[in-house]
Amino acid sequence: MDSQKESDKNKTAASEKDQEDRCCSNTSNKNEAQEPSSQNHGDFSDPVYKEIAVANGTINRMNRDELRAKCAELKLDTRGVKDVLKKRLKNYYKKQKLMHLAAGANGDQYFDFICVVDFEATCEESNPPDYHHEIIEFPMVLIDTRSLEIVDSFQEYVKPEVNPQLSDFCVKLTGITQKLVDEAGSFHAVLKRAVSWLQEKELGTKYKYMFLTDGSWDMGKFLYTQCKLSGIRYPQFARKWINIRKSYGNFYKVARTQTKLICMLENLGMQYEGRPHCGLDDSRNIARIAIHMLKDGCQLRVNECLHSGEPRSVPISASFEGAPAPQNPKNRD
Ligand code: AMP
Ligand code: MG
Image: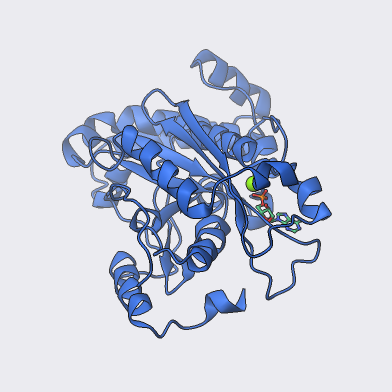
């Protein structure tokens, strides 16, 4: 991926960089704090915080059976390991108790929709350092953050142009056959249809939305590289996103080694459904984790952006500014 890391010297790249810098202004590597936004206001004098602390103490003293029984009583999900159950209960009480404070303090509405993306790309078994990954599957899964359900999905295969022949390893890994990509459209054409799909849903216009990925490679590596290869300007609407691995690690307080897709599912008491490395199935399973986290009281927030062609952490702010309205692909000048 050396070419990806090259510093861009032409005018187009410079103007793109300006946009990235604006999008990532005030960036730092500060960790994401997944707390209800009302706590960001810094006023803990309300007696409700004492009540929350007392509830947390009680929850900390419960064993797994007691935690499950309490969850069942409150009609909450009873799956997951002890730490997950604890977090679920704590957030339930916190949410209940903070409701009245939040109503007055935070007029900024949360995203209406979260759009999960999980690209599949050409690959070799060893992936040599100068290998140009090309996107071969473009899936999206849309979560309604109010009903907490998957409401729609999009999937198209893409014809790779630099390495049109898929390696046996890639076919085996992703389940994507040579025939599927031979019959698929170019990345430019598929991106255009993806944009139309997002526009039909009135995302970025009527509704506030944000992209969510499993790790930083989807936007920071696959989409960035593909746009370069296809001579397309990196889309403005994909410059910021939620990296669910970071959100999950911060929210449930687990190490990064436990934030792989299968691991996150298992810790939440769920099984992978479908075929691993099928982009649409991966997206659906990532969406299931996101929905679980939202139900557990986590406000999934933007935590990464593209900066000089590299994914970068962004500090958590109280604002829920959505992604801009998607626009048709523009050629790099
Ligand atoms: P995933 O979202 O985990 O299915 O991976 C996205 C893409 O990363 C795949 O389509 C491959 O291009 C690449 N990839 C994932 N796992 C491997 C692997 N074990 N070896 C080589 N490339 C991989
Ligand atoms: Mg995948």
